[in-house]
Length: 459
Image 1 (cartoon, one colour):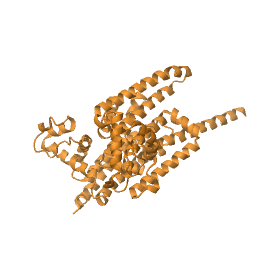
Image 2: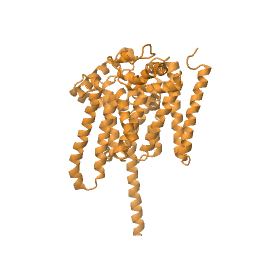
Image 3: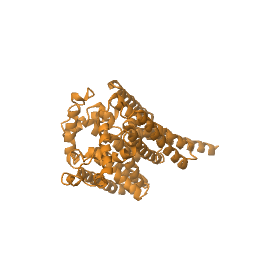
Image 4: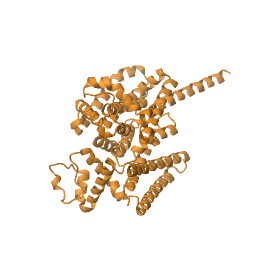
């Protein structure tokens, strides 16, 4: 008998889906009562998220037969949830205290779960999933529905924020953030990627609110710190890329606000120095906090080399690709960097796809490549480069995407891992190109309107 899809299980899943829909409906009723367009986006995004959530579970259930990390995360979070009812004190210590080899014996005996000290990131996933395992009960599908609803509401907050800050149309921004299939699929599961994707959006949103909107509120500061902590615990290299992108966004954004050429000339070196020192301090602080293989550049390059070689092995079922052997040196990084960036941004190519999931990613990458070329030549090569270097938001999007693509491309030699690791950069890379095109169109419309007004006045 099927474990989760019994008659009782199916009814439970339908009940949780109905409850999730009611929550979304109540939110739309109070927040978007008189805004039909926003309400339509809200429900469409929710429907897509739930479809990805259930679709992921069905595929891993019937195709992969629950092989992989997602099922083990589910089982561990279930056991951790049981600890709450066995010994609440031990549960909250596991959730919020620092448990290590020196004090693990101080936890109550006979618990259903004990921390996985040999793998801190796995232990972190168990803790982050535990509240959803408690709410969702003993069913993978319902736990995933609870998690996906929570993450969707955070994704929606990012969309609502960023749509007011860019020239790109609401429809295009919505598609980039909410409706890209591979992003929706891999960020709608009991996986690290679901947390890192969403909380990277929250991190960037809170950063912008604090430093650009000057909304220095407890909730915003808490959102920034909590997001950074979650990403650092799970995939710290994403945090490094975000810090680089955000610091460039900050410096470029403040410099653009200065209208006087003289003051720009005076302030620019000081601002660059302050932002650079701030970024270096943030990166150093994160490195010291994480330690080990992600503590500094040399350690990360060495780990990237080890990971690349591992992902080439035969037990990854033929999904390996080869951009050359990376030996962990800076020279090797410089030589292989361009190929790694291309791989991180645009591979797998459609002709490299050998499964349904790979084909979907291949189609997306083809569309992304076409978009890149179209905007680059439609807006003009000179104008595109000017925007990449001079438009603060575009600069952030491209730097974040390229840094993350470099890290992923240099360390990953397996398409199965690549399509999952790259999901945080896809919305920003697409938004960057669309923002260039939208800004160009807006400038052309402004020029045309001004010329029409001048012509009318002359007549």
